[in-house]
Image (cartoon, rainbow, N blue to C red; front, side):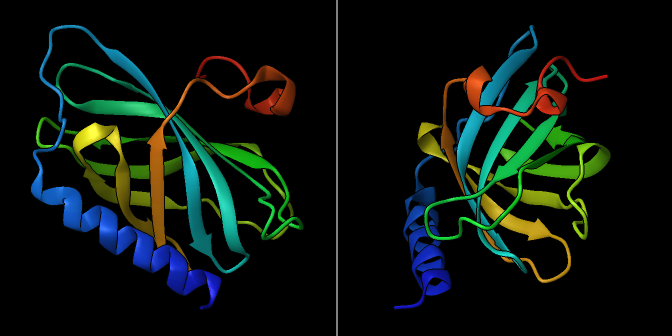
Length: 155
């Protein structure tokens, strides 16, 4: 089965689990979350790390990083800022912002999706030649593995 079909099948299984309530967000203090997983665009299957700070009103800002995976080791590393919303219903909409590290020929992309039970994020990548993404809750990315341009607070 082609890799893209496997990814889409995995997303279908995760979406089926969406019958469980979304985690959402309703508190009085900002939260910071990290997710890691994969997405599919023109360059093929690509690793992803998303770090977001979400305000009590649902506004969100953060950093989207991408990197090679075993199945596609030729993908370069890169990162750009994102901003948008992760509302109390778990609906995610992020628009791309400034590049921190831009590989030649790459364009920044947006994300739209849903936070499911267990904190998983699934949805669509909003960009040319792109498909879906699937991210799981994660610890912050290891500092040793990250390009220096992708470290630090959002500017």
